[in-house]
Image (cartoon, rainbow, N blue to C red; front, side):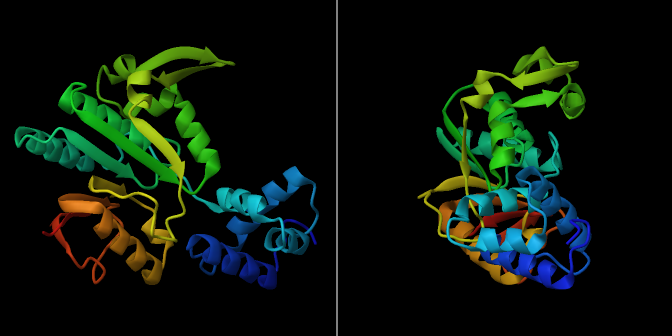
Length: 272
């Protein structure tokens, strides 16, 4: 079979497998996307047809390749200070809790992608607290590929254009890599963040909580309501009363957010 021609049966097998392993729903019309992304992975492996690849991934010993398949399928679109009002919410909450005497803060970035979101959170907290307090950020993603990039913390110069004035020099080290200029996150940011691979489709998760803030943006759009409900219930378990759940502006929790109160668009507070 030509790698450019994924038939309906192969597509149905891929989307059934991806849903079972990640909760990601691949709707009709995604054949070209799946064909291109899986085909690229198969070319790396020197494999010639989709069915042979499916048989391998689903068979005994295919667990490691399943991780690679989910890496290939996952969509990772992100930027520094994306939906900036959310970081204003974080800043306001942390400042209020600090004034109330809280000194320990735990924040979970549930879909960290290539690191722009957790590093934005780290910069927000450094600005807010000036390095004071016991502050830890957990950053998770299903993709090992993007987690590796996030840990490295290296970004092309164009990526830093959305940072506030002076932040690039304050929080990143400028250097050359190949023919381009790159900026690497400084240790004062990296030391705040722990990166882990987590599959959001299968709670409960190994964390105990309580979390002050959970940011899970622009990932639940890929899940159906059954997966969303399990995930939101787990967020409710992990958040402290009065803690914040922040989702993407395109995501609605209508009918799913029992125990949460909407306080701003895409921002929810766990009720006591």
